[in-house]
Length: 113
Image (cartoon, rainbow, N blue to C red; front, side):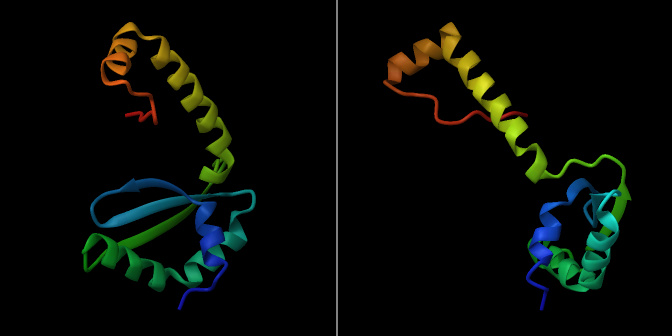
């Protein structure tokens, strides 16, 4: 069974790549030594979760330390500002205005690609 604070450590990790078998995540080198130690201690539980999630019997987890990694927790306020800006821009778009008017709708969410 995973340690309860494992969730907190994973929230500081940033996914870098997934090649269909190995999920590579990064932890900021500045405070990552202890985080990596905790994640490595429970790597079997994490890999088991990957196997079950993706139905890949040989899924692996690769954890690396990297300089200047911003976790999703740290970047959330930045993305929130970006979304608000996109919503405001979309609301000014004539085509979007017409669609909203035609369907008596409103913009609920903005998705980026």
